[in-house]
Length: 438
Ligand SMILES: *Cc1c(COP(=O)(O)O)cnc(C)c1O
Image (cartoon, rainbow, N blue to C red; front, top):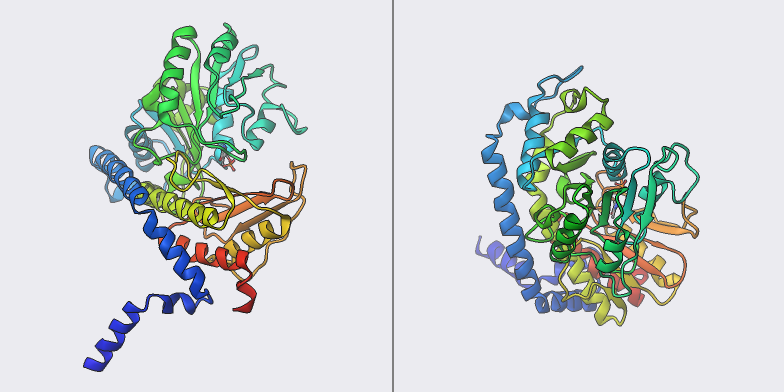
């Protein structure tokens, strides 16, 4: 008996053993553990954000008296669907706004954003983007890239944009100058998306939003909140945004939501958007779901924690890559306002090796090796790594990068830091050429 206990103690003391079993080298193990030690203050800060956001989410559950009956499936029109309506109200409380539209039927974040824009704008109205060009798929829906038919521009909606300053900040004088009376929606993208810039903080938004509201009281401010949820103590609604939209297979789904999108904001906005989402007159009142709503509630409940795990993983990778001599954004010690970490590799081989190590570290499809491919809508080949439970979910550890200079990889997610840490060690092994020898 004593023998067995001693053995266990030995296993616990020799932390490397478990990692060695995965083929991780001792030097990568040591470097990543050391990097993590040096990030304790950053991790502590992330913990305190998680704590506050968890409290906010729990309070919303209490307020709506969430119970088993809210998880039940519905069918047909779904009149008085208790789960659907309660989920809306819980989201509205969490984001401190009047109303919400949270639906499994949103195919993606782009679909939710498209519903917002097309619901709030009429022909002749202008959409003003104030964070340079929007995310790829949103651009196509607007009609400023690609060759899809039936875009917003085809429907007579006008588009203008103000670029971020070279420092990646909002250019307030240029924004105010662009606010003519036709501007009905001002569009801000919180996350970096796939560009080499920092995410915007809620603090960055505060001053800008109050000036915009003053200059254009009839314009709604819409924030593409993808990847930003629960990364800070506050959400863009606290800075004066009228509507936020995002994807449920990113932060607010907590890794459990199987699909869907959300929109939260002022009641008058949600009403117009719901009319676009279903049909004018029907709005939010119909829409059933024949599977359980439980993963949406449970996912939201876990979202502050899972987001924190992703933030810690991103900081750890950033530190490891900096120590390895690469350029990262944000730096490991910088404040994070989204879960994305960008890094520039010195050549295509390193980018490929990095993405392959992420795939190899995944719980699903770990045995496949990603290849660069011609992705529709991109000028260059793209390599992607995603061994996720929910297909395409980027709250789970995933990475991708266009195969062109400066060989940037964007990666994000990790349901647990324990998994992120393993991936970080494997990535370091891959970059130092250890992986094949193991
Ligand atoms: C993910 C994302 C979207 C929406 O993308 P989907 O793949 O359609 O969910 C929009 N904007 C940003 C910044 C995003 O990260």
